[in-house]
Length: 562
Image 1 (cartoon, one colour):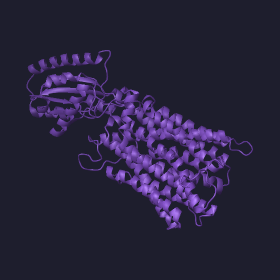
Image 2 (cartoon, helix red, strand yellow):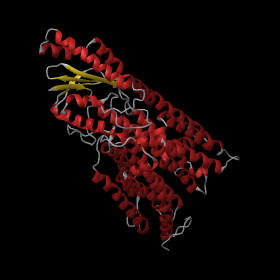
Image 3 (spheres, rainbow, N blue to C red):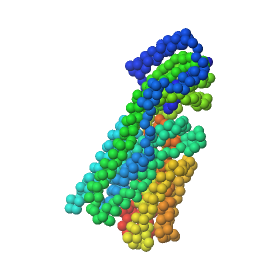
Image 4 (cartoon, helix red, strand yellow):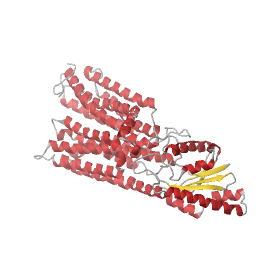
């Protein structure tokens, strides 16, 4: 009975060998193996102990190969936290400056800060795989700088232009949406790499050891976006109100955030991606077939190609002719494999792991794909749309929670004040409620490594948020509970909103096959943008009805219930 050794680390991408080089390598290797068998048959027999010592003691060439091909370690989650903070800070600064940009058209600022980004996220599934992370983040940095510069230039006294400032706000919207969709996908890729480096072969939250998977990078990015709300408002208030700087100078100084945004990606993530690509491209993968007595039957080899630049994903396999292995070894279920990774170190695998890997390998060889999912770059536009629609279990909760909480902010909280007929009191409660809400968002978005919600809890949280919307609307209309203790509920609203955000993306990265995780993470992010836009329009009518109920003038829409 033959014994096979070879790689069984991460799956490898099937690459078409157009020039036939892979076949030539396989054929020459097999010829060399015949010569090796002939020389082995004429040489003195080697004891089993000597064979084991030879297998356990890597040669100098193997040690050199290990040093050259070992990929660099995955960077810490800190860069993702910084990028999450900076990515969303531009949006928050624009919202904090809304009244300064257009006193009578604040709603236009809100729309300009959301609507352009919606088109980016809607189109992302059809072009993200063709543009690398480097170009996307570089364009995002330029858009952020352009946003602050344009709004700053046309906000000076005597030379202001609302149209040009709104155009600047739109640039921030494009940057924020492209950055969020890209960095969520990249964070998921790094979390997957961390799981693979720990020997995880499971796609779910729980691995073979029963321990909870920790989505460190997704959580770090989510935490950064959570603190961005507090940071953005604090930055604007501190520079304009405490230091007394003009809005123009405040925005010009914020251009430094765009520089830091690009530098953080370039210094910590882009360099790591390039280093890993170089290591992966040069790594050789070898598949050796042995019989029970340790005699080498055949050897095939190929180059490992890994998708790590963000321009496509799919099942990854060696480029050698895998059919040779299948035809040589016969019944694979009765074989024992000694597996050798790209680093040349031999490891033994349990029978269960071997069977699991062999099942995946057979499927991949048969179809040039695996049960991990489709190869994204090969999908047509219609196929990508159909695949996007299958993510509804994650999109609906994200849309619902965002629609409810932003309807609270845009509608209900604007009609609460102590007393309600005081403009200053209403403005004060609105400011306090948003500060407390942002603190709740930050805490819950930072909780991904501590608690990861089940699918049931993930769907329950948006329902609770809708109950909060109904409860606050009832309170604003009846004043049944009417004092600053309502801020406790505002904090609770933030906890639910942030909890759905971080757990939604953690569940995607845990539930879905590796080959579509990046695609799913960038695609699903459109749901929260739809929720915000929907809430902005619904909030206008909620505000008008509550204003009418409390005898307040100034609503820009007419209550449909009047």
